[in-house]
Length: 157
Image 1: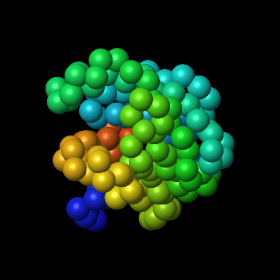
Image 2 (image 1 turned 60 degrees about the vertical axis):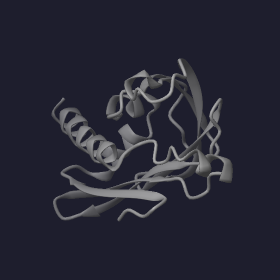
Image 3 (image 1 turned 45 degrees about the horizontal axis):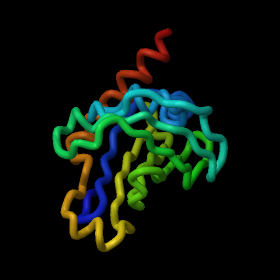
């Protein structure tokens, strides 16, 4: 389900929720499954509760839209329910108010993973900039594909 201010994509991954959550809650996991090429590396520990933070080192060069150089964002966890849901916003140089996240639901054959990207709460200034969505629906779908591949590789290891 996608709307004018939210992208929501689902995919069934043949793995238990805990195997998926391990990746999506790990700062380096964010870098590993990023389909945009913007996330370069991460610093910090995996969150365990809402309010926890970690840093992602970014480079927007891969999108070729804005020359921001290399910069850092602080990921602030908004929702944390072990093996079920995680969501976050970013703080730092580009504190905008958009959110990202995943919901996990056990189903026959694995886990239904819902990835969402929501910019409905950004300020009027950012809305008028007309740059949203920054991440396309295709990029969200691609990230789920990379997540599936990464989970399967981890399960075989």
